[in-house]
Image (cartoon, rainbow, N blue to C red; front, side):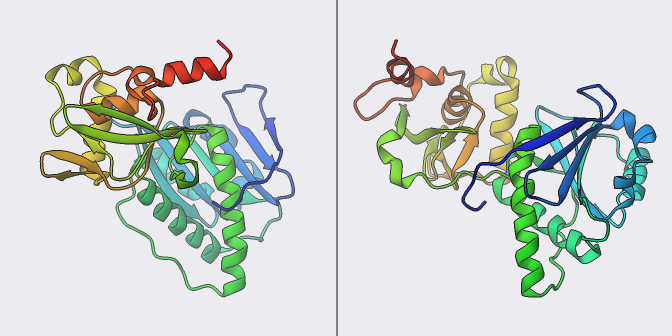
Amino acid sequence: MNESHPFSIKIFVANGDPDGLRVIERSNWNGRALVFPRTLLPEVKTREEFGRTGVYLLLGPQEDGEGELLYIGEGDPVRPRFESHFTQKDFWNRGVFFVTGQEGALNKAHVQYLEARLVELANAAKRMTLDNQNKPNRPSLNEADQADLEVFLDHMLQILPLLGISAFEKPTSNKSSKKSHLFAQAKGLKAEGYESTSGFVVCQGSQAALESVPSMKNHIRGVYDLRERLIASGVLAQKEKCYQFTQDYSFSSPSTAAAVVMGRSANGRLEWKDKSGRTLKLIQEELAGG
């Protein structure tokens, strides 16, 4: 994502239910996002936005573990695609799609480009399992169209975290702020990380335990499943007697990060320390004036 600038959004709750259909618009942008629970599709699909060309996301729980499953698609228009997924895809419980406020501003090639870029970003971030079976190719577009679509995509990526969707966020480098980095060590393992606005980032090259303790699977199953997914996706790759992070990876909390690194239950506020040995808990208390 490019350099961020302040912006405002407007959320219209179409049926008066905060959990129902929401229409999101961003300042100085002709795009529009619609978010809705699956159960409302038969009721809301008559809205004119569903008749436009757009790119969409389907989200729902994974059947065999913790976390969400994600499907990325495009439609010209989107309504038939949602109708098809309503009858043929079981996993999703909410849908999100992006169109423009001006009908015809996006065409088939445009949304194919956006779909391909979103799949690329999700595969690079590896924060959510994709239900997509194929990796779409970018269509051939002229340089001006690609530039315009990258701006459109950038605005989408700024809105998605506000909807609780972080599948496309890959941590930016924090090399200029090394003094704020924290470290965790246990049984010869060494890991490095830092706090960010999206959670706690463990740095590329950090080590993680080769084996998790037996109790991890039973007592913190969600973290155990996350660790297994990171191994399967290649974020954690075996190197001699440990795993090693192949990329910077953002966790929801310092404790989740520490537990994945150590292969056991861990209090991240106590495990992560600065070079002086101060725990994250102490650092946070000092920053809060406590």
